[in-house]
Amino acid sequence: MSPVLPLMIAWVAAVVLALLDSRRRWVAWLVVAALALVFASSLALLLDVLAHGPRTTVAGGWPMGIGIVFSADALGATFAAVSVGVVLAAVLFEALHGTRSRTFGALALFLTTGLCGLFLTGDVFNFYVFFELAMIAAYSLTTYGQEARQLRAGLVFAVVNLLGSFIFLIGVAGLYRVTGTLTMELVAERVATVDSAATVPIAISLLVAFLVKLGLFPFHFWLPTVYASARPAVAAILGGALANIGAYGLLRFGADILPETLRLGAPVLLVLGIASLLYGSLQAVARRSAPGVLAYSSIGQVGYVIVALAIGGPVGYAAAILYAVVNSLNKALLFLASELRGWLVGLAFAVGALSVAGVPPAAGFLAKLEVLRAGVEQGAVVLGLLVLGSALSFVYMFQIYQHDFWREERSVPAGGRAIGAVTASVAVVVLALGLWPEPLLAVSRRAAAMLAGGAG
Amino acid sequence: MILLLAATVGTLFGSGAYLMLKPDLLRIVAGLVLVSNAAILALLAAALDRGRAPILPLGDGAVSDPVVQALALTGIVIGLAVAALLFVLAYQVYATSETIDLDELSQLETRREQELEQEEVSV
Image 1 (tube, rainbow over the protein chains, first blue to last red):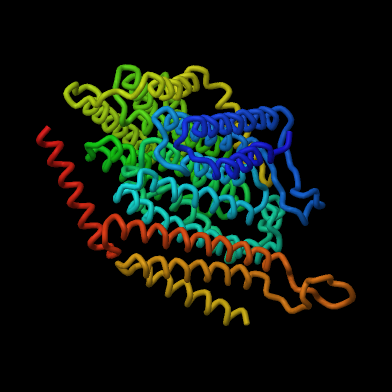
Image 2: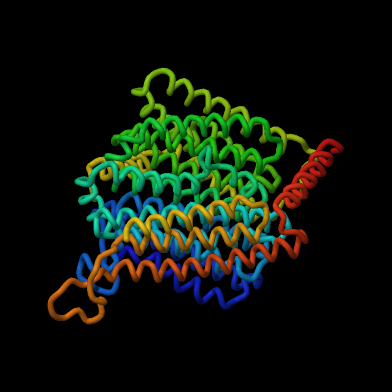
């Protein structure tokens, strides 16, 4: 199966739907149908990659080394399937709610195009192009709703992240300078022989770009405003799908392309990850509104991904992948459920809260377990701080659950039953992954083994 | 030549970063445009070599690297699109908040948050 199939479906659908008005019901459903198709094809691609190994194709039928390479491996295909799934849930949610802007559907599809493209590309510069495509769609989506604070949040989001992506572009220029190629596989091969005096500045610029995207402390300052002002569906897309770019980028560029430099920088990443974890959790405990808590919780939760990445090796990478996937599902679920009420949504939110806190049988338990397993080798201090962060996440999640769902007088009229069902189905996925963890574990270990095995 | 380009990239990036620290949306957007141009110049400088133009390179002699020129073109297009988007966003902020001064905007934000908190307390 060709790795460009999900990308092409999303691209064509986005261009066609850009001409139509998303506020019409049938157009909104067309968007959902197109995304469902993209989701199905990315799942099929994932299964194909798992069964038959990585798939590579060169755009336009050019010989290898001249044309732009698209390649799907276990890591990219997993992230693509999860992110598209999250966007699908958010768009379905918004379609049931009634889309309020003409461009929402097309922007969501362009964002999906960008995400599929960057997860499935094998070319460093192509990664930047799709990355920018996804980000530009995201800047516009943030302003969805057109309220003054959403516009302000959109501007902050755009300015900070654009600075990040230009720094990334300078890093790409550096990589091309030292290796003379843009194909990821060749870059990884040739960069191994380059002096670390040249690779360290390049690695730092790439690292800064991805940490800004992830919203890791101390690059988090834009994140709370943006996540808390955006509408729930958009916040779910930002927190559940777009943040994956940062985690994927760090895994791809750090663990796959620059493994030596990643090892050099591991102590820095470990400290940053733990600082982010504690800062985000403490700030979240102090918040009283669901979007605020969830925004700071995002800052805290990515700390786990970074700590796992810093620990490295097959166990650390597997934990990082697993945590990123589970975290994006958690965030999608919680943001979608945060403004609805009713017993079904309450249950769904509780599942998400349990998952963030790492309580079985939700999938978050598994992810935390893997990170802690990886952390055991790092000694008592790191392990203790990880457990402390985990305990804090339990406190803030239940504070907000109690505050929002147990106080009857504040209950807003529940959204339709169908919207509740959408959130509940995401919750079922989170529960199912916790109860039957083998597939997810196997996928993340496969991808991690590939990363730890060197280039490819 | 490399040193000259490096200095230019540095100056562009530095001036852009300086402008982005100003509390005025238009200056911030202008700063970002400068930073984007610094990145494009860095791309061009990444494969600085002497040679003939890479159009139909027959015969002997070195040919300069065409890849970076393609990259720089893509970078310019993206930079232009992004600048347009930012100007639209800045205009929309002006249309809804009637100011492009960041200090005033953050005051508006704080006021709104206080109102929200009071609502919460009264409930």
